[in-house]
Amino acid sequence: MKIVSWNVNGLRSLKKKIGVIITELEADVACFQETKITKELMTEELAIVDGYRSYFSYSRARAGYSGVVIYCRRGLQPEHATDSLITKLDSEDDLSFSLPADTLKCLDNEGRTLIAQFRLQDEGKEKSLLTLINLYCPCVTGETEGRELFRLQFLQTLEERIKQLQKISYVIVLGDINISHKVIDSCDPGDTEEFLSQPHRQWLDKMLTPGPGALIDTYRVLHPCTKYAYTCWNTKLNARQTNFGTRIDYILLDGRLREHLKSAEVMAKYMGSDHCPVQAEITNINVKPSVKPRLSVVATYLRLNNRS
Image (tube, rainbow, N blue to C red; front, top):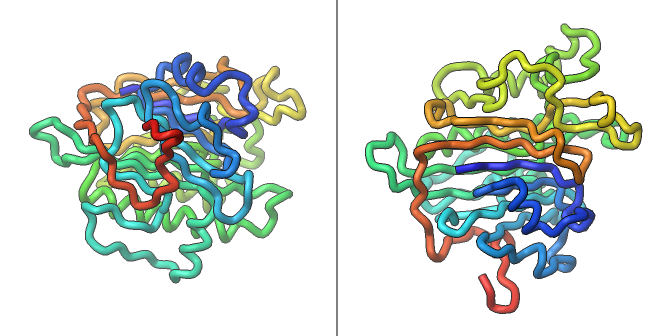
């Protein structure tokens, strides 16, 4: 299974058709972030890709903002899909979160999450489910001052959600995480001690610390010392030409699946956004296709003109 993640910085701004892009990326499962699309602006070309099924999450807080999508090759469609970080799937018991309900609703309102759960047909596996979480995590810049609390609350809730899902499923977390993990992942980290002490960076470090429930950074596991492997650049400053960037896009794999990781790449030469795609290939994971996925929210799965 080849999984690709890419912050496209607007689906409608792409110069190529989405089907062409997915083919070029050779993706079985293509996860895009910052789609900036709404149901009202959706087109058949974006929603219906030959050989794939599409699942969308839209921002309910602001039109043309945020948003994520998953395109799954036919035969790999999930059993369940939801655009909510805090809604349980059919196979789960009741969920519990640390933050109050009104805060959770705000965190869940910007179209930053899409969860797809697949049934595995492999016998002998510890778990029979595989859950993929496609994310566009909040960032904090000069234009988003005052959002640090929102980001930390989002990450806290995401961590709780991951831990809940790991009780019943293997988990893959991917997308634009908006965090450079280590000094090696940033072109300009500044003071090392200050860089590493940032709460959001410490959160990611904790999630990747070996131990029960830990995730692994697929790229760094296979390329531990590779420098200048950046995934995002300030294109207004032509920073991509000099590779003055950061690595903030990840495919994080459940540590229990480490032996299934075949490859992981930063596709820096692929153009079309201020980010580049990242890819990971997982072997010996066989998905049992679902003919009619059960969806928590209708908005995550789109049919146009009676076509699926």
